[in-house]
Image (cartoon, rainbow, N blue to C red; front, side, top):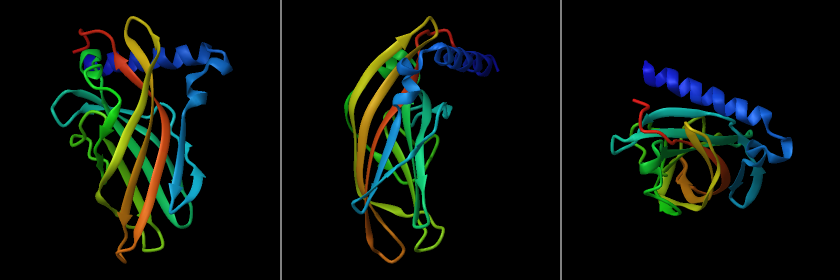
Length: 190
């Protein structure tokens, strides 16, 4: 209960900070999700402040961030990224390549792993499986701001993978994104 209340206070502080920012300095205005399916490009809808506190695959405190989604009559796609929430754990990992999973398994994601859901509506309203994993690359992690409770980072990355639909057809997917990551800067949040 104490952790939940403290998490709520931190998120409220974060929202207050952003609402006082000048629009040109607003980090949320820089978030994006670009979607490319079979060579055709779309602008995804960024999910602002969509964070889920949970545990990572190695039982460390983590946050699953809903980066964004895109939907049209042919397909639906969304992207989630897990990251460590405590600063010491967070800074132990950095830019590089990480795994991609098919669906949003809250406790199954490791630090900086991505979960991608893809529904090929031309084959019905069913989730489609990733073929052979794919690549999730975090190209840049940048510290944006800090206060006594949290540090705000921005991460830029891309995902390149193939899905196999029910008819065994390959669907090429490329996602480019920039997302905000909220990391606790204190140890006494338990």
